[in-house]
Length: 201
Image (cartoon, rainbow, N blue to C red; front, top):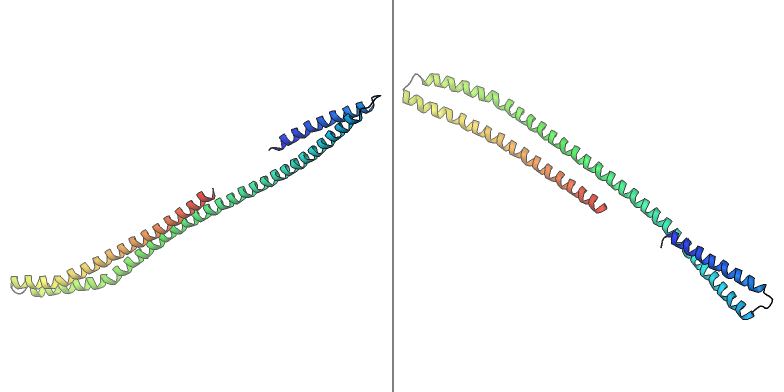
């Protein structure tokens, strides 16, 4: 029950108390007092005083409970604001970590590709030079024999190039898998943070 209703009830009881008190005082001044009526009015007055005292206690308790409820509500709002702030910070940190992980993966892949190319390129050029020299020597012989020798010499180069392409594809696949795993983990973290925020609200 709101405090205003308690106050209104208290005022009504106070008015009734005042009326009864005035009635008792008026009858006490009468020339011929009625003792029985006076006793009855005194009892009613005592009862009203007791009721008024109880209502005052109830009103005091209600006001105290209202103050406590307001304090708890304010504390809950502050806690909710803190949780919301923590959620926003965690989400921002997760995004920053995701972007940093992507940047690190790209840098690592670029470095690996450059290193592999630097290692393979000199051997590849040397192999081509040797192949050209061998082809020049083979050009002196029979055309069919030269074709067979050319095919024999080109086959290792072809296998070497295929191996190099496979390594590049494997590196790209590994990067894509790593980026996908990082993305899934960050998405799971974002969903958990969102669920926590919803449960908190």
